[in-house]
Image (cartoon, rainbow, N blue to C red; front, side, top):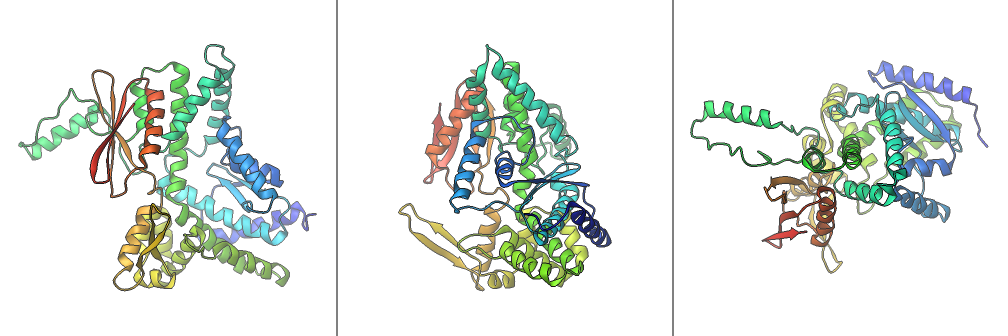
Length: 435
């Protein structure tokens, strides 16, 4: 049974927003929805997007979370907030009052980050809910179309999900053919010895937007092109959240901690708040807790450079640049960071620890892993005249799992409907996968 009324939350929300405004935060308006645990599992499975298109993978995620929750092996998030305008935040109605207050302050931090961090500038938060609703209706019409049907729709979504984040990522500029040619002409003026651009080559330069290239150049029926474009759009929408998990959660945690201390909570609310806060930001054994690392870094930035620097970090950085810019040797030592590797035998080896000699390597390994850095980077290298699509892999010292890579190539083949070749480096030698 709830120990509060909705009017109580409205009063606390007004106080939270007033404190946030005084500190210079500028969030979207936030719409809170209070749901039970079953609905929260559904919201998590569908990434918080209302009226999302259906797919078996979401049902699988729902059942897995539901079963683990029921046997006590997995909990549920305190909240789930959508990068939309207004922001849509889901809260468990069973939460006690102190936790709802913490969550609302946390959501204010997230919403401010969504609105003001440059990584999110192209996500079109004002239309995301409507876009999802319209896409769901169209996908359902394809399922009901006798010439298409559910099997073709699901297999196409399967393939799109396999390369959903092989897109033109924020910060990368995807130029049109005309822009590439003009850029080359401008460079020729500065360097006349520059080799000529091969105008017969397609694409003129490597294209990192695999779904975009397929949608633009593949011989796809309209329904299939629509699914590819929707999945590509959704990948572009979610990619900034993958890029900013640490800095985003750190910013939200910093502000729920700051705001709740200024709310002057009574002891019966303040003590459990501190306990919950410490549970959220505690370090995790053998891995990185983004809440912990992000919160600790923002506290250190404030101590070293002041709040103006914190707001600058919130505006311009994603996880890898955030850590590269602000993580120091003292931080690595105090946070007990180390790097390790898992051998094929299953053994785990500690590679570096955060001492005077090893901290920079630990930091470099961390930068490489966060913000989607563990997702391999593929690109369209060539579209041959015989229809073959040649895919390249940016090898950074980490080999692809070739069996998994073959499945990805098969999914690309399903979308492209012609031969696909992936070239990579494995075990220090050139390797090709052709399907």
